[in-house]
Each structure stands twice: as structure tokens, then as C-alpha cells.
Image (cartoon, rainbow, N blue to C red; front, side):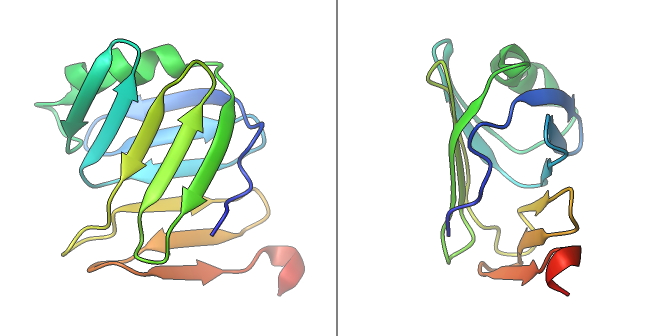
Length: 127
């Protein structure tokens, strides 16, 4: 599934027990599970939390004001986002928990459910 995030600019982020990324067009990407960030400064694999906040900040912090060049969601529940400058963020589905969600500005919601798979709610315009 191709998620229409291309061209969105990362405008905000919170890193703690979850990773929350906000975009210029009003999308919110929330990651609650193990993620991989491959950046020019290296690669980190970590689950969000206080013990990994510093490592994740080193790799995600520099993405402020960077543009998303591609975003894909696979039917198993994986998420892959590429940014200009060469950084890639990937989240696999989680066996027990929701791995990530994408909330659109129009109410469109995609959730990677426990054990994999996707649940999707249409936008307010499609209801």
C-alpha cells in the first residue's frame, strides 16, 4: 500500500515511550514498537523508551524540516519511510502490540495491528 506522504515535510517530533512524527500537511505518525533508522550518521535499532531516547534523537532529530520522498506500507503491517538526505525509517509489525499508526488530517487512519496486518478507516470525506 502506498501511503500518500511524499512531499510532506517533518515539522515536529516527540521521542519518549513512543516516537511521534508530525508533518506539514497535518499527518501524525506514531511508532510504539521497535524501529530501525538508517541515516548518514549510522544505523540504530531500538524500541521507544527512556533508555533509547538519546540514541533515537541522534538519528531522528536531524530530520526536522526534511521532506519525505516515499512511504510504503506492506500488507503484513510493515512501514517504510524515506527522507531526502538518505535517511530511512522502518518499522516491522509487532507480535503483541500495535506497531504504528498514521493519522491523516482528514480523519484517514491506518493501524498496524498486533500480530501484523492492517486496519484502515476511511477519511471523513469517504464516509
